[in-house]
Amino acid sequence: MPVDFQNSIREQLLRETQDELLNQILPWWMNHMVDIRRGGFFGRIDGNNKLHKDAPKSVILNTRILWTFSAAGRIFSNSAYLEMASRACQYVKEFFVDSVYGGVYWMLDSQGSPMETKKQIYAQAFAIYALAEYHRLNNEEGAKSLAVELFHCIEKYSYDHVNKGYLEALARDWSTLSDVRLSDKDANEAKSMNTHLHVLEAYTNLYRIWPDALLKDRLEELIEVFLVKIIDQQSLHFKLFFSETWENRSTAISYGHDIEGSWLLTEAAHVLQNPAIEKRTRDIALQMAKITASEGLDIDGGLWNELHTGSVRPENEKHWWPQAEAVVGFVNAWQMGNDPTFLHQANSVWGFIKQYVRDHENGEWFFRLDAENQPVREEDKAGPWKCPYHNGRMCIEIFERLSN
Image (tube, rainbow, N blue to C red; front, top):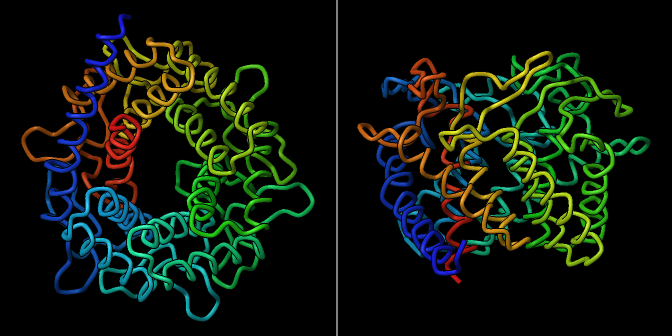
């Protein structure tokens, strides 16, 4: 691919994703999700764009809103984004933080009362990730202190001193929990790739504002856990669920997590500024990106969701978030390896998003598409798992990577 053509794609991606963020994604959330009467944000808008004012309020939704508007405010210096981020931070601190046992609750009712009080480590990680970003926005010490406090909660109660890594979930008082699943779709196992990926992400962002020695050790160890335990040494796909001693308990492949993990691993290594770790993660990330492209990309440019046991091809659906992560992951691979094929793939996925995933009539993105690339309206437009984080972060990452 000629250099001029690469520059043209680069400029188009930068221009269009910035427009998507500033004129589509962020305004949609600002206009539709602010709960003026009860504070914070509404818990759900369904796939038919109907607001459910009395829906429960998820810690994942609220911390992802906090991260997105904090990052946007930091980069674009818009007072409206700062206002949204401050609103989210205040609500998280006032309602989601457990003042008795520490940590954050999983779910509140629409009034802000605790509804599900388990301590999902995934949720603690997202709170750290978001609070660290809020501190990066405005240097608020309270956000930093709470992020550090949550780090110590994870290390005290979830860290596995014998086998390394982190246990999936605990009860409100940090005692053992029988059902540790993140969602009904997940396996009830002691450890998961997904939780470790987002602890890695959270610790990376926390290290940016708090380069603590223990945090550095844990971040280096997490990268090693991924390279040795979580990545399958033959296929180079992530294994998804594990016993406490890292016995593999799954056979499915998640293309979205593979490509997302490829760039999050390189980001963690870069923050540590360790050349040896950076080289190892760069080499594996490039291989993972190539495999994701060869196995997971459809002819229409979209990324399949998962490949399940016994299947000869991926399931016939595409979710919104793997598309967003694919754009970032392929741009990351292009930047590391200087192979223009990756830039072309990133642009192809972005083209798929524009044509099929974006809701041109009502705004934001559809959650999931069926085999004919039609939106599945039984899935939420906004809710516990449908947030401005994946697509918003895609736009932010592209801006930070390509604007220099």
